[in-house]
Structure formats: C-alpha cells, structure tokens
Image (tube, rainbow, N blue to C red; front, side, top):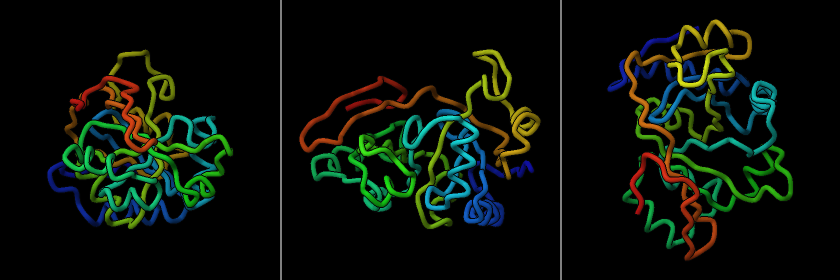
Length: 207
C-alpha cells in the first residue's frame, strides 16, 4: 500500500499507478508542502463518495482542488484578469486561492447552490505537480488531521500510522521519505474581479 519515491524525482510508474487508482474511484494519500493530503478524482463518483464518507463533510467544504498549471485551474474556476496577473508569479507556492467555481466542478462534486467558490492550490512539490499532469485533470483534496489517525494534536504523522488507521478507505500512500511541512497555506480570496481579501495569513508571502 505504501509506495516510496524520491521527492526530487518521483517515479512516473508509481504516479501512473496512482492515476489509475484515481480513475477507478480510489483514494491516494501523499504529503505536500503543508500537510498530508488525501485526493480523489472529483469526476469519478465512487472516489468522491469515498472521500466524503471518510471525512464526513459535504461538497466543497474543507476541500481544495490541486492543479499543476493556471490553465488547468481555469477549467474549473473563473480566474479574472486581475487575479491572473497577481498569481502568475506566486505559483507554485504556499497558497490557497479562492475563485468563483465553474459549473463543471460544482455539478461534479454535487455542491449546494450556495457553494459558488472553490479553493485552488498549486503545490510546489513534484508529487502533486507530476501526478496532476499525468492524470490529466484536477484532483480534489482534503488534509489528514491528527484526530483522523488517532494522534494527539501536534504529534507528527508518519505514513505507517496512516496505513494502520486508514488501510480500508485508502488505496495507496506515496511516501517521499523526506518532507518538511511549512505550516498552513496563505489563503487569498480572488473570487471578485479587482478585489483581494486575505482570509488567512500563512506560509506564503502576500502580496
């Protein structure tokens, strides 16, 4: 269940295997710059249902879309010209950007009519970037909390602990062996043309 990779050059064979798992409605787990993530393909209902059941949370709440490029993000989010100019020199990076969601994604994740925004991340780690690129579409993600794996707040999470506690719902864990979490991402709301609202000061420097 645990696949080990080199963080500077993750094995494409393992990432392709992960992509196949996602296409078949499975869940994949790996660490990014901020924390451990669980991802699914948001356009595969089986995987979406498994992720919602695991987190016991509804559509688009506490989830982010993982993208490799701005053009990929534009397929699921409305990125205004002013927002594009602001983020193009910031990505990839330690940010979560809030955009107006396109119907393509709100329909796929069965969002409520009031859920019109979506968080988008361009993670700097190569597992995220290469996996999305090989998969050919965005991934829906949620982070692993200490509570989810039965640990006290502040305790470090390791892949073997994730495997022990989430062996049932997870289909693959990708472990680069070395990772350095920088803390929560900086969250910036860019959903309205010409307006910028920093919702959370985090590890990304803004502006």
